[in-house]
Image 1 (cartoon, rainbow, N blue to C red):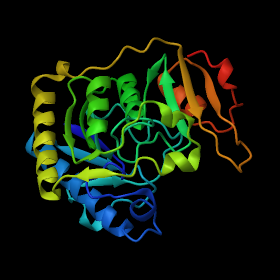
Image 2: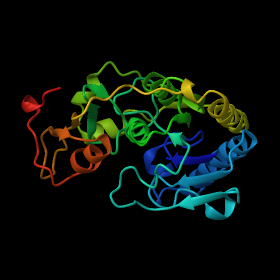
Image 3: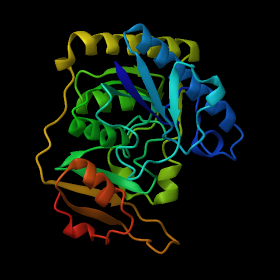
Length: 288
C-alpha cells in the first residue's frame, strides 16, 4: 500500500498566523516547521500500522516547511514543484492520497487562514463546484483513479473534505473563530489577509494522537472497503474558473478571473487555474 501525503502549513495545530508562523522571516516559522513535521510523523505511524508499505511526503508550503532530519525515516520526502505543477509528484503508482496540515478554501466560515492558492483568490470552481487546494489535488487523484482517504487540518477543512470526498477520514486540530456570510468576497487583498487569523487551537498531543488513529483507520478502510471513498462526478470537457479579488496599488487592481474549458481536470489545473499567462476574463463574462 503506497500512500502520497500532501502537506501544507496553515492547517497545522499551533500555527498561529501568516506573518509570524508561515513566513521564513517570521519569529515562529522554525517552530511551525517542527509542528508540521510531527503531525506528518503521526500520520506516517498510523498509516504503517494500518498496512502501508511505502509513504511519500510532498512539501506543499514553500520548499522547506518540513524538517527532513525529524521526519519518520520510513517516509521519503519530495520538495519543490514538479513540471507541470499539477498533480505535483502524485501518479498512478500510488494507492491513495492523504493530506496533513491542509487549510480550508477561500471564503469559508469559521476557517483559520483560509485561502485558495493565495489570498487574492475569491473562489475557484469546476463545473460550478467550488474547490480549494484540497479539492484540486483530490480531483487530480480522482482522474488518476486513486481514492483520497485522509485529511488533517482545521475543522472547516475537515467539513470541506467530507462534503467533497465522502468517506474520507478526517482529524481536526483547530477551529477558526470568524464567520463568513459571503461578504469576504468584496474585501481587497490586504483586508482579506487579515480577516481569518483568530482560532481555537486544540491540545497538540491530542491532535497528533487523533491524526495517528485516523490515518490507521483510513489505511485499514482502504484495504477492506476501497469502494467507501467517493468523488463528485466531473463531466468533460470541464469548465474551470478562478476569480481574483481587487488588489489596490498593483498592475491588476480590479477583480478579474481566469476561465476556460479543459479536456481533463489535470490539464485545466495547469493551463487555466495555474496559468498566470492566460488572458484575464472580465467577471461579467464568467459562465458560472
